[in-house]
Image (cartoon, rainbow, N blue to C red; front, side):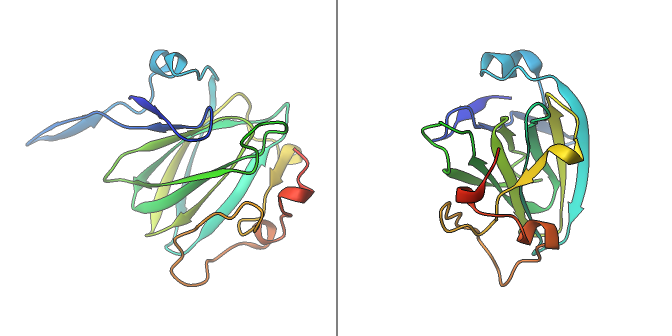
Length: 179
């Protein structure tokens, strides 16, 4: 799966090669050699699968070191707007965000390295598959960034008020962040 650079260093868009005929299709979702060639070397240690109804906004989440996680995110059913925000202290792009539509149709993936907050907005009912690298989830290491922080300015393609859970709505902004 070819990795395409985004405007934020280390954040990669994965563009699938799809091989199909009248019987169906095949695409590769992960190839460690190809990812290493693109600069990603974390070992996948956890795989998560989630479902969200249309209008749900989840995030922006991250894990603090030493339990910081990288993620390779795919939408396997439906459509979503996926967002990653650089929260790496000292990074020249700290506070910058990148968003892309992931869907079961375009089969794209987003490789979110450690040091990024991640979230998404469900454009349709959708299912996500997360391949998590470096460390398994640790509740004590979880952190978050408010989804609507004006200092970050994510341009979410909202269709009305999003459904955001209490925890995500209580996250602070970039100025309050402790990574």
